Image 1 (cartoon, rainbow, N blue to C red):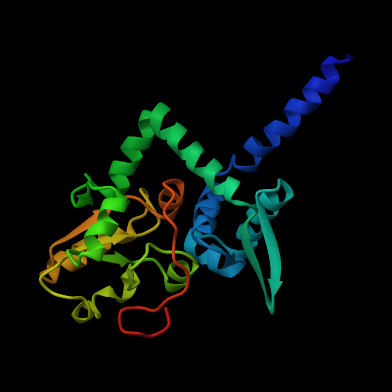
Image 2: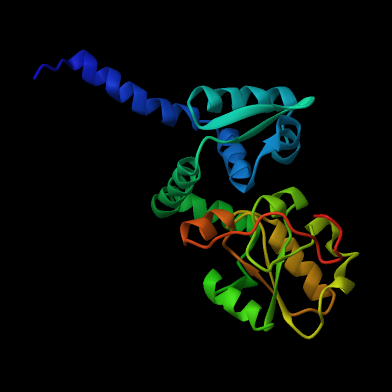
Length: 230
């Protein structure tokens, strides 16, 4: 069996391409957003707070390294993850950073606060409580993300609409809000609004990446609380 140093180096160079593809923080953020569902370049740019040109450049790198696919949708180009393996890879990178880098916890605390309002139960227990009408599960992500995949039975009110739509939520029942996952601030803001409106509310730390990893089958499509298309 023949081998050479050059061919082995070439093999590891291919492995290293994935590391190079995610070496920019904004590319990781774009992958995180795409874990929620497909998006246009314009939508990604707006949510990542970068220019369309900058977002396009980052997405081009991710596509060249096999992490995302693109597809023309009318006047726009829509991006999606190349496979579920990419979401699993992103979650593994995040978990490794959490385990090995103390700075992750420090940065997360500075961004999210001290964790007050985190829901301690697992998602499957939360769903059981929701089926028994013991709790209201509220998805506060943008409507497109809710339609791409959400917890079964979850209601949809995007966080930027929540203050004016509190009357649509049932009173006398705890509300557990969730968004994109552990490092998303939307559910934190939702809990603050809900508590100010007189609701008992907590935040579920997990998001759709964690739900899928636990084998929870997500629902697609659906409507907001009021019945308007989400």
